[in-house]
Length: 221
Image 1 (cartoon, one colour):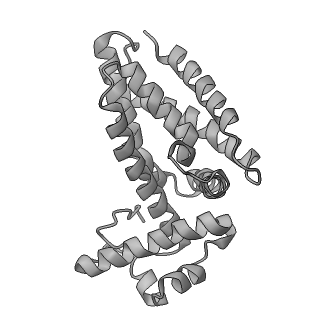
Image 2 (cartoon, rainbow, N blue to C red):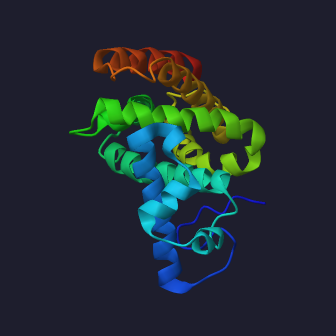
C-alpha cells in the first residue's frame, strides 16, 4: 500500500468530506500528544482511541494500522517543517545561508522553537527517529514520499547556489538526498544516544555547526 499521508484524505483512499479530514487530523494530533507524553511505548491504537473518543472502525477507515499512522505523523511533521523553513529563509539572499539555516533547524528540531521543552522534544524526536530507521527498511517507498517535500526544498536552494556559483554543479535532487541522509542519520543517532537525557542546547548547537561545516565543504563549488 502506498503512503496515504494527506490530512485531507483518509488513509484508505475513501473521502468523507470535511468531517473525515477533521477526524484524520484528530487522530494524528492525538499521536503527537502521546509521543510527547510517553514516547513510542505510549503510542498504541487503543491509546489513540481513548484520547480521541473515536471508535476502532473510525480509525481503520483512515489507517490500515499503526505504521500508517506513524507515516502520517512523519508526513505532517515534514510538511509543517518545510512551511516553517521556507518562511524563515525567504529574507536571506545567499543560498548557502539559507541551506545553513535549514540544516540547523533539522538538527535542532523542536529546540529551535521559543519555549520548547527539551525533555518533551527529545522524547518525541527519539521515538520518531527510531521509527524512521525501522520504516526505512520496512516501508522505504512510503517513507520517501513523506520526506520528499524536505528534499525538494533543499534541492531548490542547492539549485540557486549552483546558479550563483557557490554550490558545485550536480543533480540538485541527488545532492539534496545526500545532504538529507547525512543530516538525518547523524541526528537520529544523536537523539537515540540522548533519549533519556534532557536536551543539551549547547551540544546540539555545536552539532549543528559541525554538520553544516561538513555539508558546506561537500557542496561548495
